[in-house]
Every structure is written in structure tokens, then in C-alpha cells.
Length: 591
Figure (tube, rainbow, N blue to C red):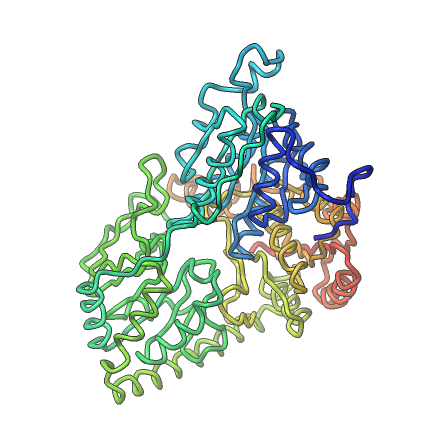
């Protein structure tokens, strides 16, 4: 935390007793060790705003002004993933919640624990101003109820604390996700004649981890011990550094191949059994252990991008699929996220880390050492060949002009490889596997969860905030379209002295949809060369470096010559080490 930014004046050095309803909320957040409250200001929580500043001294929590509600929630989302803690944000009544709803949905799909504070009402019509009628609703939470794990709209100051504690408890209990609590404006501004005692937070602790049914665990152990070509896939557990030693021990014990789920990194890139990028190991497996894979169908049965009617149905699958996760507990009937059907032969409904520990203990004397050693040797040779092919693919495009995405990633890796860094964001569709040597879980924060463009800027800055506070270098590679949707996050980073190296992968297009348009045109016998129309961010091209400078960033670019990338990144890194938010704008080929 940087107490020198926006320090209030004229306050007592010690915090007094709460005098207003919203003071209770601030005292509770302080007790719960909430360091930051990203928000975009709104009159529906003007009482809370005053309490944070003039009762709490703008410390624990500290307000973080964001230029859009979506940025505020995305910032809390990224911070939560980087720390493993509850992220908290505040959004203005109906209109602010509407702005924030995409970010809330991302967090729900990503199973990220957030506490979203809103303002509503007042419930008493006699207290409402004219604007309050159009900015409040009878059930304001209805806007996000289908994609939060819990919501409440306490109407009195006395009810605030209990509902906030329950929301926190539910958000941090499996399956995790965002909870929304709208604090009645009248209750916030209610003078407290008698100060109600705060409930004991120890009575509202998150639910403990739960383990699998012993009989089903034994079934999984038997399948893994008998497997000839086992494969382990890890998903969202990749945010927890505790997962890496468990996964490494398991794949080494089994002699199994390992493959990351999409947009995660749980095992060190350099681990000799890490075959991420070789989907063949999944197709050839006889037993697959999927650990905390939220959407197994996407990794086990990927559908082609061609005509929808040509998508193959699930074929008879000889693989035994063991699903170690919270299963379908997080599914909702409103959204289809994570609902793609895929056969799960053995469902180990369990906390993933606890389940991994129990599997390791049970397998310790069940795996045949000679067979496991033989498998390890085969898998390690396969992984070594894969890494050679991956390096060769990057080298083949190193001299491309326009800059290849692989060259961009390679240059950024060379710039930061010797620093203790956190990769907050990366390009996904064009990421060259095997190049960036990630040390394992917790080193990369993944993507949005819900696929909502505009997540990146706020989440990157949220991750950078966590990195700053623990002395790490924050690094992110972001697309031009994603950045331009929420570029105001750069102002928040500069204003609150959040250093980060932000590299813009500018292909001058919302390129993900260009191949879609080409496929549709080809299917219909129409000219595919028109696929760029309505996609290209050109004429005029956006000078993102100039935009970043206008927000106060150190910036370089646009860089178009690949031979200039290294020096631009080196200068940017020096600026970051001096405390700057540094942006390198690179013009890059689409793929």
C-alpha cells in the first residue's frame, strides 16, 4: 500500500468509534484485512466513500479510483488471482452495476472470490432524491443474480455486517465466485445512537476443504496404477503454488505425461514430463486425470472452427477420464459456461489439492516401479523432442517483418527472464508454448474465464498491484483491442504508483473474428478476402504509445522493426525499476 497517495487531512491519528452506518462497514473491512477498494465513485455509496476516507483514514481499505466500473471489478479480479485472497470492489447502484456486469460474469466463470459492494435505495421512499428513483430497483441484485454465488440487499445499518460476512464466507467457499451486497443508502447515512457490536468473523469462516468418497478414491487409484499411458491435466488449480510439487510428484510417480489446460501453467515449463503443446498425448492416453479442469470437454474433445454442422459428435472414447474437481457444484441453469457434456468415468468430487494429496498417498505403493520408469523415459524423450520443435518454430519466424507474435514473446522473455516476475496476462491464440520458462503454479494468472474482451487492462493492473506489494516485477502482454476497451486502467496504475511492464501485441484488428468471417464466406461461396471489414483497427491506426503517455505512462513505439524490440524492452524495464508503468507498443503480425 502507498499511504502517500491521496492522504486525507485534518483527521485524528487514531480511528474513533463508528458514528454512521457506513462506518461499521469500513471497520469490518479493516478487521478482515481488506487493503484496497477499487471503485468508480457514485452517490449511492457516498456514505461509504466518506467513511473510508474520514473514518478509516483511507487505509485498509484504500480507495483506488478507476475510470470505469468494469475496470474496478477486473482490477479486484486480477488482484484476487495473484494473492489467493478475497478481492473487493465498489460499484454505483443500477447504472454502475450494469457497466460492471461483464466483469462480474468473467469472475464467475473464472471462479474468483470477490465481494462487490453496491449502493441502493434508500428503501424508505421518503428519503429518496429524484435521481434515486431511476437509479435503484426493488431487487437490484437481479441484474447479476444468475452469475454471482450469493447476494443481499440489507436495508439497515445493523444488517450490513452480517450480510457482508456471509457474502465473504460464500465467496471464499467452494466453488468460489463473486458475491454482491448492495448497501442501502439510507442505512449508510444513518446516525448510530447505539453502536451495534460487529459479529465475530470467526463465526463466518469459509467452508473447509472436502475430500473424495473413499470407495471412489480407490477406484481412481486402481485405474491410475493399471494405466499404460496415463496423462495428467491441471486447470484452475494452477493459481495456487502449492499445486506444483503435488503435480510433479504425481506425474513422476506414474511416469505420466503432463499437459496444461488452456491458459494456465501449473507444472514448470522445463519439467521433463511437461508435454504442453502436444495434444497427441491426450488423444493417445488410456487414463486421463483432470485436476480442477473447469471445462473438460474443451481440452478433451475440442471442436474445430469450421462449419458448425460439421462439428463431430462425441465418439466412443476408450479413455478412462478421472475428474478431480468440485464437479458440477458451480453450474447454473442460466449460463452454459462449463456445461458442455463429457463422460467422466470416475468423479472424484473433492477439493483439488486435498484430492491430490490423498491420491499420492494411496498410490505410493501401488505403482509398479519398473513400468513407471519405462514410461518416464518414453515421455521425457517425447517432451524433449517437443521442446526442440517448439524452439525451431519460433526461430523460423524470428526475422519476420511484420514482427511475429512468437518473436514478441521471445523478446519479452529475454528481457525479464532473470527477474522475479509475475506474468499477469499473455496472448492466448498465438502463444508459443515452451518458450517462456514458467516455474509453475502461481506464476501466470490466466485469462478472463468468461472470454469478455476488456478484462485485460484492469486485471493486469490488479495483478501488478499484488506484485508490487511483494516486490515482484509485473509483466503483461495485451492485445490492442483488449487494451482499447479499458485503457483507463493505465491512469489508475500511474496514479497509484503501480509499476508494470505492459507490452501491446498490436495486430490492428479484432483478429479472432477474421478467420470466422473467412470460414463463413468460404462455406457460402463468397469472397473470403473481405473478412477484414468490420475488424481492422486502422485508418486511422491508433498510436497506443501516445495514448499511454497521455495517461502518464512511460511509453515506447509503435515499434515495427523487430530488431528494435530488444532495446525498447530494455529501456522500458529500466523505467519500471524506477517505479513507472511502462508500455511498449509493438505492431505485430496477426499470427
